[in-house]
Length: 277
Image (cartoon, rainbow, N blue to C red):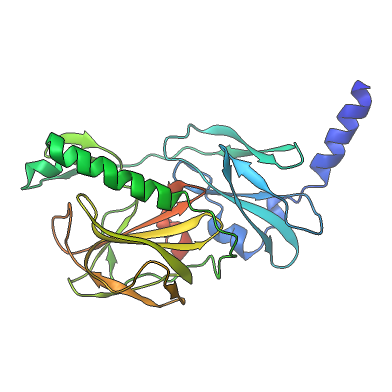
């Protein structure tokens, strides 16, 4: 019985595609580090397999028309080592996470409320946080139109993803997105087609737009000076979203862009081919 079980396990592993066989999407996205993305080959079958990681459903596509792959966002706090993806048929697949170090960033803010908010602001922040967490958790059936994203604005990348942030000397959450240093009023375009699922004017993020690209892939744009879309709007790739500003907790005009995958904030530079380890 043990021999038969071992043989079945070996055969199931041999049937899984190797990453060495990967196509364009694997080469673009497979950056298995904390805050990065892992591409996992899935068993061959007529319909798309269903897979999950840390209890969250994963984006599954057929790469280059040849094989099924799952694309998993890796939480920033993940330790290096093995992680596990669960399939709906009860099987598990393992992938390895490599280490990555992120630098520190020290920022001086004039408004101390943006560092240590008072109780009234804390209540507002908690209400707004719940709205935004619900948007990040969106998982729609739509297939993403593309996974090589356009840049939402053309400008210098300023603050990178993942840096440890200190506001007025006090450590806060790591930077969860990518900043572009561009002038106020610069038009912001959708990096891929999607549906607007949330807009708001928030304490920390200022004027903000969330766009669902499909299957747990969500973009968030914040600190806008103007929002030019409404919830429910369908945006084509390159569609106009709003204008760059400095609303919320910002020291000057810039665009902050988050990318969330299976409810995990990941490095947006991966999706625009600008990732540097």
